[in-house]
Amino acid sequence: MRKKKIVIALGHDALGTTLPEQKRATKRTAKAVVDFIKDDYQVVISHSNGPQVGMIHTAMSEFCRIYPEYTPTPMSVCSAMSQGYIGYDLQNAIRTELLNRGIYKPVSTILTQVEVDPYDEAFYHPVKIIGRVMTEEEAETEEKKGNHVVKTNEGYRRIVAAPKPVNIVEIDAVRALLDADQVVIACGGGGIPVLAQENNLKGASAVIEKDSAAGKLAHLVDAQRLVILTGVEKVCLNFGKENEEPLDELTISQAEKYIEEGHFEVGTMLPKIETAIEFIGNSAVRSVLIAKLDSSEDGSMENVGTVIHK
Image (cartoon, rainbow, N blue to C red; front, side, top):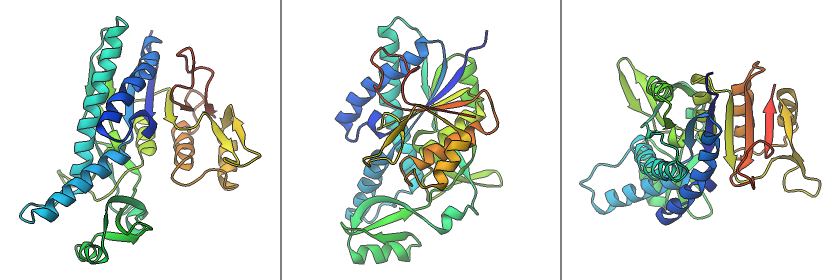
């Protein structure tokens, strides 16, 4: 009997911010991931990288400011760095948890590139704030380089596009590892955004929404379920208000209706719901679970969070 495939998308709460926080957080996250593995799922893991990639970009930019002879580091390279060091902590934490439970299964991290469309509307309307706070003079220098800058309460910051994922370059490697019954970590931080130019892949100055990339990953490996672990117990209507209403389940048509009514915030719950709608499509088999990490007391994720289905 074929095992069910599941893609788990880890949010910021599952990883922490600083290096010590990340070490502690990945140990806790590994327990939740292995709970799925012990239930005999084939597991692919995707994760966010917001604080981490920002820290790397800031550090590299500051380094080039102090030592002008060094070349600035592109966003795509910063994303690759974040995939490497998050994957390193995450795969080791999962490996340890598996062995502690007597489960012998390899865990692999794939440095993953995600192709985006160069004509995606997002490139004309960048929204993702990244990197360090700059002075007005530094901001002007950035704009002369062709980069986009926005003024915030703290000062000036760079902004980049958030295009939709078109394809995952290393998807055959992910499938091969799954077929070998390995645990796979892929598309970290939404993947390294790249543009296809004939036989070449060129890094794009962009950030892909990690939920959107996780949905594409789940679709391409033909997963039955996408699990999005986030910072809230359930999807809610009127979130944060006196009449807040948690939802145990949600159909695609209901989700589309609630989006039209403006129940889900841009940048928080909205991309998760949009990803669920796109992943499930017209399938009666696929489903999405949106839940909080550690929301289950017995290790089971069967009766927690909000389940979205056709």
